[in-house]
Image 1 (tube, rainbow, N blue to C red):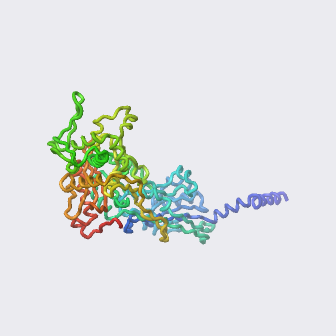
Image 2 (image 1 turned 90 degrees about the horizontal axis):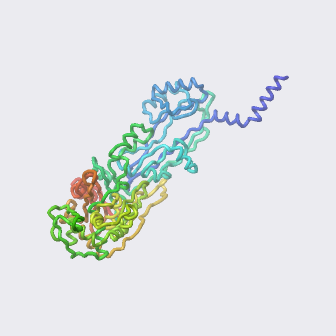
Image 3 (image 1 turned 135 degrees about the vertical axis):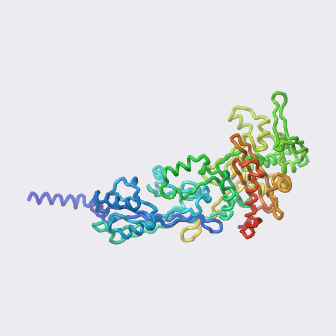
Length: 575
């Protein structure tokens, strides 16, 4: 009777007092839930050519139901001989974990045939991000990485969990909430030996939304090839609406490296590389613009009526400022000088001595005012994290920054794009785009549309005007005439075509740490602009020789002017 009483009490405790607990444990042992990761959305260009997609990948899960520790360890040792198990991921062999990812198909077939010899093993098929062209447009597209504990805690409401893959940079990061999709799951009933019996419930995953870009893949490929082996950036815009047609930063990296587990050696090679392949030069490289800044100096001087088209200055290769012991010499890029010049020829020949005197007449704060009006004092509006805004100095800025006065010598340096002035390549693309369309600063954008997995358009992105620069028609006419003349007879003849009218400006930025940096900005056709281009080549030397040929090749590609481009697609403002 005593034994019966003890057994009855124990039975009451198990079935009544702790009944719900043991029922849950039983169900957990009987039912196994396997996640079904959602494929990320596809990224394609303006002509619907794929730029980023997914591929099938095989992973090995180890779910040792009803296996003791010794049996589980034996299975892992067997699997290690076949696929090389990632033992660092296994904290407890009795817990279900992914022990190997992206397995070769041959090994998958072998394990499937020998499944009975590997109890607790499950082969899972899942999508894996794929960048089919490797480093192509890497800084624009971005890359993926596993979410951190901190990020997960900060985004609890978004349903993240450890192990989730999220966008780290570029479009993958900016549009992660669209691209990510909705994960699914499968509930499977297993028997006492841990073998699947039946599927109880299947919640299918939903693919992420697809993103259509303004980028033209063919033009992007051309720009990428032109910058191969160089450091620098290219930005090609549609000046009529702000669409980005091509965006290149070199050196670059292969985003496929970050798909799966990245080794410490790979991280070190990328992030400690002195060439900075992870540095997005389009939006982050702050450099002196050199003579391309003479566009701003010209506008400021004309608008403030400090000069007109008949204003002349003589250039003998040198300009002196001050007197006595404080006298300073400033040189022109042409040592023998340009002689006596008027404004249009000075723009075309990029005469430094002429612009030293124009800048002094216009004044630092007036130059800064128009630089700000034309978008150089702020970020471009592109929206990528980490974008720098450059620097347009003023007399007040120098007083606050260095506790010093602004001197005429500072103005002389500033008016030719040297000294304290700093810009980014995308800002210069914006500038030449504003000149092309005569005053409208569009927000550069790269995403045209977002479409869900069923093909329904979720969102369409339209041009957005950030500001309008109100200048007199005469100023625009004079500036354009000077930029056209630079192509016809001046420093920009590298982009002179028989059947295409181009306006352009070169820039050679002095670099105290090595060879000069090369700049080239242009737009075409004059009168009906369809593209605006900014090319920046680090340590490229003179703008005409270091960056100009690249701009020419881009124009040939866009307008089908080169022999190999005769059948290439061209662009229109409406495309």
